[in-house]
Length: 463
Ligand code: ATP
Ligand code: MN
Image (cartoon, rainbow, N blue to C red; front, side, top):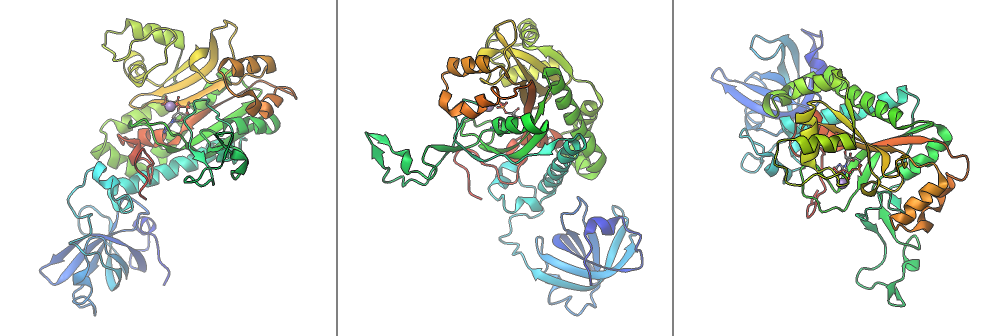
């Protein structure tokens, strides 16, 4: 018999018919009358399915009574309307097959709630909890919504390389990729001889696909990447991972305003999509993880973002009657505490901050006429802070070259990037959205380590 996913059984009109389901046992209760209730969850939805197992079943004594939390089973039975509260339908089993028992003395996920930090140590089992099943489903929905949003707007999905020779951000926080023998590095004139390395030169895991995306935007007009990026920054915060997924749209013939419009439309689309499609999971997060979640998601999906310049942001912060840890002066980067004050307190809604000082931003951002600022934009949201960083790109060859030199970057690495400005250059703009930050925001999970299946952070890569 063909198996049906529990989420389909729960909404089916197959009352009175035979169904087959399979999944993992969440609870078992035995009735005095000599039968058992199993709650089975297969991850297809937040809710599981209640199964009533009669004591007359052949293997009731031998198998069913040994079934414990975490055991994997398949059940065939009749779908009936449930008399009990809490579920509309249940299955009256005619057969129960046990694939695998889980020893209750050793299986860690018993009824008792385990803290998120502890669950990170059993990241291979945590998807079987309510919370991490829900995070996985919401993350999936956000990924689907991302493709839907860009595809419907004629953006082309582009696969940019993960191994690269250039440091897109110029920040130098990259993981090196090498096949050289660490115990016996080849040397020439005292230096490591990279001509013997796999690519004949030093290479790294990419921090961003942007530079490559620009090459395709200047040929195909609209592209987006959606892939893993890597940063060897030793930042042990709740918003940083060493490996995280990023979405990077890039548009030709577009300026900073077009870029802000796209970012705003995309973020609002994402949240509206999960409000429409992840009702049960979001209700769970709203109840158990973050009480204001639904209200916040609805308010972001439904409201226009405020747009201010960096200079205005600095003024607002200097006026603020709050003791910040880091002082704010025109020219310094905004810290997380500043970003959060702006979006949570000063404006109370998502903010797009534009036109930052050139000195604190990447070399590729377009220089404004004032000679001091660049056409950058960051999107800040309550609870998380920065969720998007982007800019109009410098399309003028000489200005770009000057900027590369001023930042002390190795000019020879960027020859192909400069070429784009020699051959048919055009205004263009794009941004990077940290997918994990969006999942964090969308679920209310406090730590980004709980918004990705297997977090990579300093000193942690067990799974
Ligand atoms: P932050 O100041 O928060 O470190 P950033 O300025 O380094 O961010 P960008 O280089 O602009 O970030 O990257 C684009 C987006 O990627 C950010 O807006 C953020 O959402 C996300 N992001 C950046 N670094 C990380 C990280 N280590 N882990 C998870 N997401 C990140
Ligand atoms: Mn950073």
